[in-house]
Image 1 (cartoon, rainbow, N blue to C red):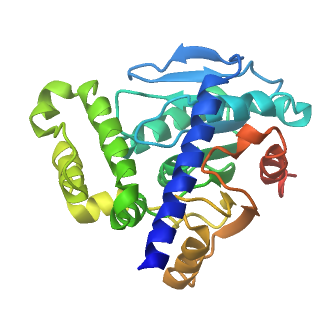
Image 2 (cartoon, rainbow, N blue to C red):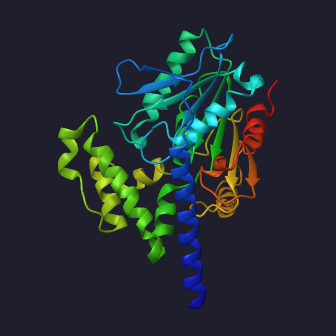
Image 3 (cartoon, rainbow, N blue to C red):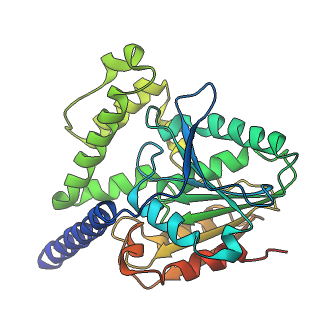
Length: 310
C-alpha cells in the first residue's frame, strides 16, 4: 500500500512539474514571426513562414490536446527552428489551427489542405507532418490518406501516445491524478461550446465531469461514433506506405506517456509492419515541455528533420 501511495504521489508531482513547464512556455511565448491567413471554406487558419525559394518542401505542425491551436510550446519550437538557416531556408513552416473543430474530425480537412498545397506548388517534393502529443496520432491518420501522392513523406511525433484512450484510462486508475481527466473534459466542453456545429450538438454536451466513460459517451454521441470507431481515431495509425518514415521523439520520464511500453506494444501487435520507425529517447522529464530548458532540445528535432534527407 505504501509503495502504491508513493507511486501516485510521484506521478502527481511529475504532472504538476510538467504543468508548470507548460504555463511558463505560455507566459514566455516568443514573438510570432509567422503570417496568419484563413483557409478557404473552413473555420481554420494557417500560420506560415515567409515562402522559401523552394516552397515544395513543407513542415506542417499539429498541436496536441483536443483541437488544433498554436500553443506556446509550438511557438517556441517554430521560432527556434527559424534560426537554423539550413532548415528555415529549405522548408516552409505551416501551423494549422482550427479551434472550432475537434481533432477527431480534422483528418479529411487536413488531407484536402495538403492536396491544395500540392496542386498550388506545382507538386510538393517533401512533406513532414510534425505532431505534438495527440497531434502525432492525427498526423498518422492524415498521412494514411495521402498514399496516392508521390512525394517524400515523414511523420515526426513528439511525446505522442499510441492511444489517447489508454492514456486517459491510466490516469483514471490513479485516484490523485484524476484531476487531469477533469481538465481534459473541461477542454472538450470549451471546444464544443464554440464548435462550428454547436446548434446540432449542444444537447449532447455534458458540462460537468463525472467519470471517464461519461466523457467518452459524450464524444461518441456528438460525433456519431461507436466505441470501436472512437478507439480507431484515438489510436496511432501504423498502416503507412513503406516510403513513409516515422520518427518518434519522446521524454524518458514523461508522466503521461510511457513510450517503452508503447514501442513494445507496437512491435508485438504489428510484427510484420514494414513502415520505418525510428525512436529517439530524451533523458528528460516533460511532455511537450522540455523546450523550457533552452535550445538543446532542438538537436533531436534537427536530426529528425534531416535524417535520410537527400
